[in-house]
Length: 497
Image 1: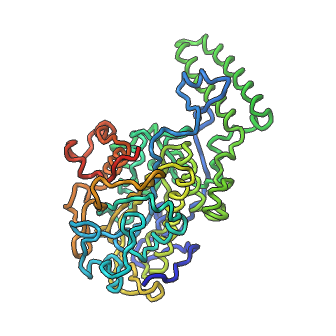
Image 2 (image 1 turned 30 degrees about the vertical axis):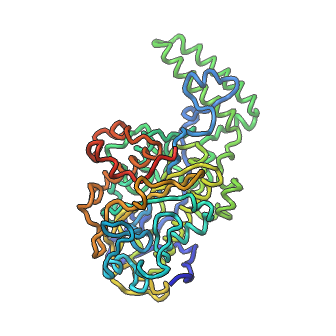
Image 3 (image 1 turned 90 degrees about the vertical axis):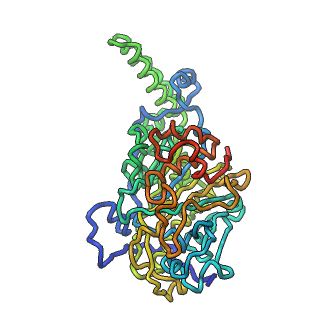
């Protein structure tokens, strides 16, 4: 069933379900695709963004201000939050029993995961392993990835799937590991974390309570043509020019420091003021033209996403990947909506998966262009299942008919510009497993029925890429993965840094 016509790449029709209550919250509207990804970019205040200038270099160094956009030296991290309960297991990323991805389920189990009997993974031509991680050959998610990522990029990608149950149609699943990633060392020159939603996690699904640090709350970037607002220095730089603006800022710094010397606790106040003004002065010098961060003006991004400004989902993806992969942020969450697609029409669901795949593929391709590694984590709230009915308009694929969190999974991809990442254990790309009937075996691992521990395992794998597994308990005190002797069973990748 290969080479079938792909669903429309521009289909963005909201899903309405007879058996669902009417949406009442912003998250409900997002999950059904009733609101778009457009919005407004907001960032920290001018005094909160730091950089470097020749005149203030010593002060900047003393204050710990970054002097280049190189980032923290950690692997850039981007996660995709597919709001609404998308299909990942089976029809997209293959899952199997205890023996791994290719340990076959029953035909009825595959049917439940949307795979028709004529497309079983055991049949010729039904499996694709171009990314190391096995996808179904007819996966729309994979088709989207391949539309944006070249063969040279895919050759240096490896991945793993985690079989896990999570709750359907709710933002309460603590899927998002961004705070743990930041605590592991992922920092940027401007901000630590980014998200496309104004939420504690930066996306739809929440962050685990034991990882949240209010000082690291993600900066919202949802309409990324306005990423320039992260470093907008106003009229000062444009009217006076870079050097003139710097001289003004240094004069203000000296005046403020002189006044601070007359206050109680003068040394502390003066130090705080000096560091604040040094950071602002540096930002004026380095970002006099904030368009340096505008993804719509990036030739490489426009080569990947032609006319990127015309599509809100692609535009916000482009902004996150630019800011993270260029070192201005340590990690970012891209939330995509409309994945509550169990409407009895497989074409619509495949169109959503195709678009998500293109966003993922674009990040991989941009990482290759920038010669940077990247770790991608893809998750969703719940899952869907099929009753075995075929949709002839989708080439005989089976329709999605209901929410079903027992058919859940998440997956990780790692790109290394030097060479293909290596698995910790050869050919071991699946953590946890499925029962033959097409449901997650919830007792397979502590992660299989515990989303908080799943997020912890993602942080553990991020540390593994840096050969820093030993720091795990320090990064997440009170973690639930047991003693250090058990951590290796959750690590899927060998170090790449």
